[in-house]
Image 1 (tube, rainbow, N blue to C red):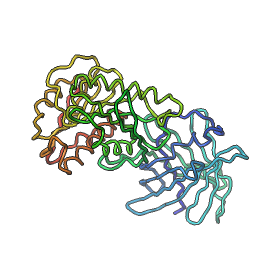
Image 2: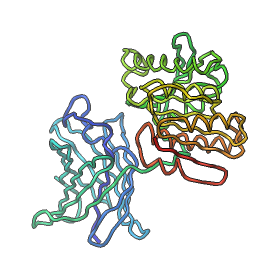
Image 3: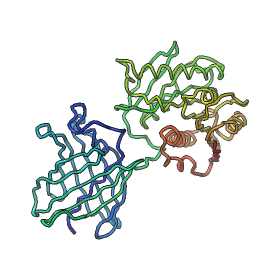
Image 4: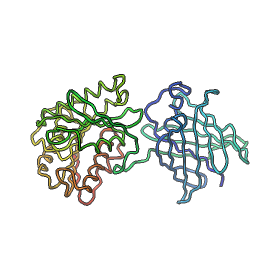
Length: 402
């Protein structure tokens, strides 16, 4: 069998419009190489499965891609590709190593964003040349086609379809994170955010009780940051869930300011069109109220909410997810709040979970489903609806459409 030359690329990150050769980021047109991807392809010898891991290297001056193709459980191809920008020729370059052969390609990007790499040189025993063409799909992933020229013109060799690999919501999201302390209108806060360029969705999180301190909830902030969420945990210092609901808006105003302020750690990082509110106990109660009254809220996560038991007036209809233990004294209030929520909503009742979100097994389940909900409702990734709704022993899941 001939050496395979199959490149599985993935989801275009953002809507990059920089032309090839932009001094700001010459690799922007091929940023979709970065990520973890899986897919299937067609070869004259049959169908195959493929995985790819792409990452920036050398201070983001190159993109390194490792691929592996398997057929009936047997590895049939592995390679390493490195993409860089050649400033002298003002062109993309791709170097590929596979089975002891180095091949060099020149890249081009057309007006529709279609990327083509055509071989210009190689160190091997044959004179075959290869060409790769990649086309981004509307929602996620891309299709690709590989052609070979053995001296009689370009002929199709393989083609495939790949997408972003679904990460398990019960594991870390894989992003690095940063954290710092802040003061928002006199309220102490902990800010956790991904260590990247963004922009990222943001969560305003309220502790339980009178929220006298942001301490104790740091693990949640760190966890969500690894999944690509800016998380602001705020010591609201009040005993009224109704009044606290309005203070969520104050924090969203602060996020708006920080996203534009020169010198802010959040400058350019906040996706202000994807804001969520969350909280535990009385904080969950306040989050549900805020989600009903503030049109900026796109999702609400309420952990063991202490209410509201009564109907809350408001026009907002953002999706809501309530997670509570079956022995929690506020189960009836949370159930009533679930029934009253006007938008798409989920109620997850965890067997044996206390109001303080323990024991550990219950906490891990809560974190897993919280992540799935945020990925589904706030990021709009429909693939996470299934792991959000999946049944298992010790868990009851309900959903109501808007």
